[in-house]
Amino acid sequence: MRRLAALALGLWLAASGSLARADDVPARPQRIVSLNMCTDELVLRLAAPEHIASVTWLSQDSRNANMAELARTIPANHGLVEQVLALKPDLVIAGAFTTRSTVALLKRVGAPVKEFGVPRNLAEMRQQIRDMAKLLGEPERGEALIAGIDARLAELADRPRPTHPRAIVLRPNGFTTGRGSLVDEILTAAGLINLAAELGIDNYGQIALETVALGKADILILNTTPDGPPSLAHEILHHPILARLGDRLKLIALPSKLWTCAGPAVIDAIELLLDAAAPTPTGSRP
Image (tube, rainbow, N blue to C red; front, side, top):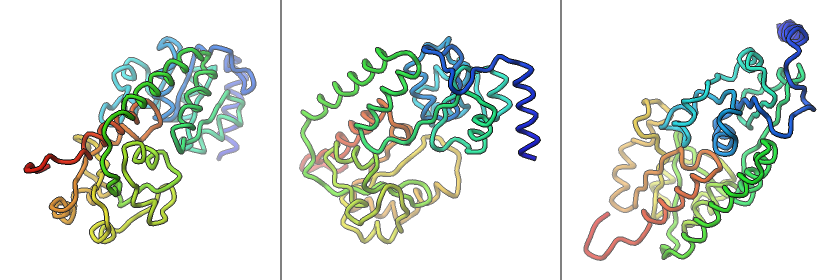
């Protein structure tokens, strides 16, 4: 079946003759297609809208995406090969979590696909912005975006820090984030100690609610999606035990869109954590 699909696509391409080849990406692409919500955001921030042929449907939902308003003005895709090819792109951008079968088939037929990974820290985030801007033919926009990020980080660095409280992040399905991740650096930048890293968790891993309840955390950070649809994955975030923990832990709700993707919004996450983790004035309650 896959061979037949690849053959059919190959014949379609031969007939159309209008798809840029993998090694023939123009210096400033004019028909960019993004297949990943995180690459969507960088493309929307860096490329001229008229040069963007399509972004994913996920980026049009303001509950999950930071550039939804602009994304709604651009045709959406669902990551299907036939959708991509019909757009006649001169650049297709995929992310680490883009459907691998789609990426593989696009590469097989010679589509101009470029893949981006997941930054593990702020330095890698800056480099990814720089690499994306260069690929899009917009290096100046990339440097301006990085300069804005660094200016905000410098401003936040002058703010009073909490006295290094221990914090644990809880995501849907009981996942947390440990060392070697962008989230770990976000917590550090906000003056927090990542308890998951202290427990030896690398990158992303699961943690039992009992561990959270019996641990030495001072702050519990809940990854939330405002007005999101209910799901089994999110039920753990509304478990009664978490409500009871609010008596001894400071609970902070952090919108997932602020730190799901590596971009300027992570600075908003740092600022939110700094403000929320600030010591409560004597005589008042959180």
